[in-house]
Length: 387
Ligand SMILES: [Zn+2]
Image (tube, rainbow, N blue to C red; front, side, top):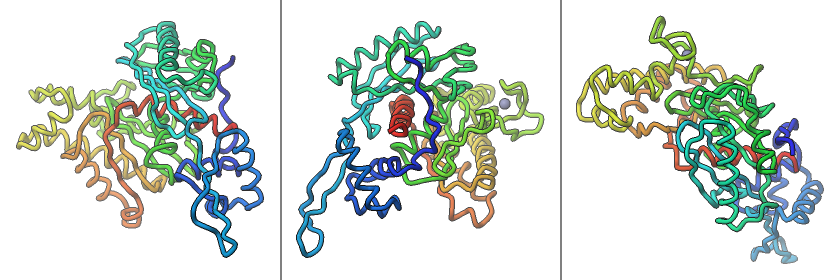
């Protein structure tokens, strides 16, 4: 079986997709509520919901409340989370978490695979883990409608190929095709930042949003942008390289071959190096924040500088794209401290007044399984778009 075909339709544009999107957001809705929310005619809603009911994607829940004087009960419709399941795996240099999720993006089974260096090892380990997940969850293979894979590096999502991953030392690996063949289900691959943005839209903080930016704070910094409800990929699939925006003229050399990039100031790798050079012994960013909290000026300065540079880059982003929200996902464990405060202040001090109240800035800690769960949401998203 070939790797999964990426849908060319505009996501959630058709009546069917609008219905699914609304039911993913709400616990349950009546047909008239669906028509009101989606702007789709009542007749089309009846038709679409009929098809979904026959397929088992929707269930009818009779309500006790009544509609009008005739006393006819209002039938509520609910998406059946168990109608379809998806696998998700995050491939990186350390352990590879893998999950199965239901149609609502809820994790139903989890597995942790040891790190794999070669693509062959990765495929072998994933196939074995997939079998184990199926037996542990008792979900029949026929209910798994695809797998999503995230790889840290440069990914050609359209072709399903990892073009380059420094962490894995991979070049031009057809990840989606390899896994689709081995697992006999459609497969899609994307980079971490894009997958997290899809996860935010599918089950996270951006379910109601059409325009938002997702910023991923890790060893390096990534970003992804939704515009008009669609992930913006750019002309050569390379949008979102916020980590390589120049923030310090003639600054520290960056792995991209240039110098003074945001990654060299605010990325986790860079902050660890800078702390070490300053004689600060830390294991995590939480340690650095603790030092700053207890009056260590070197630690405070590093964090403040990093946050300020990040905030300046994000302020430019706000001016360019006018997102409803900027959603930060913190894999480094900064917590609420100097770094986040400096980031927020730099954004607030550097955006025009009319963007101030109109742009939500939200930070959250990356929860366990966020990456594989986000990977699975790519498969779920493609499945729902293909209905
Ligand atoms: Zn760079």
